[in-house]
Length: 251
Image 1 (cartoon, rainbow, N blue to C red):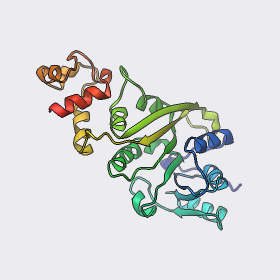
Image 2 (tube, one colour):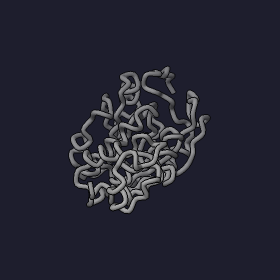
Image 3 (cartoon, rainbow, N blue to C red):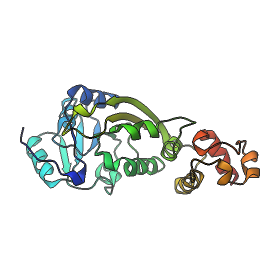
Image 4 (spheres, one colour):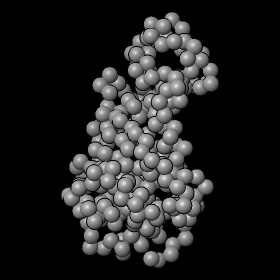
């Protein structure tokens, strides 16, 4: 396969373990005829597996060199290449409103903003039917951690669907080898009906996670916390999702 030097600015570390590729694709239950978006396809190892399963693939590749390489590699296959930044692409437009899945070994640096985008798409009924992502291990563990180690992003994702940590992926499964391990997560959209304004809820959560090492009473009045059934001496990470919803509905 043609050697294409990686560009550090895009955080390029190409997945090379075919067993991990198969796992990533299987978790999204990719079937013949499915429409799948892939972000950062690199040299096409995941793309090839998606095509083998009979999927129609839309690849978002920001690197013009890889875009050209992939266009040549997948000429004649049901693969549409888009040379663009996945964080600003309108998924509903490129899929033409069709149901789709998202399967990607992501550049680690875009994980948080992409998850934010998926949250907002969930509340517009435009999110992927199933998302299967390979991201930085530490982020994968943090975003899926339950109380007492819950995070802002984890609780925001909980408002929009079901997020699960699946497994660790070793540094050696990438080329070039990154400094950190990877981790696979899956997400299925299920917007909470009690939250009608995700932007407002996100700002509320952000305020709630200010001073994360301090007790929650430093962020909200004690009388409000007690009314919501939340122990004022808890730290933000210790609150369950239901606690946040109860507090949100009072404020």
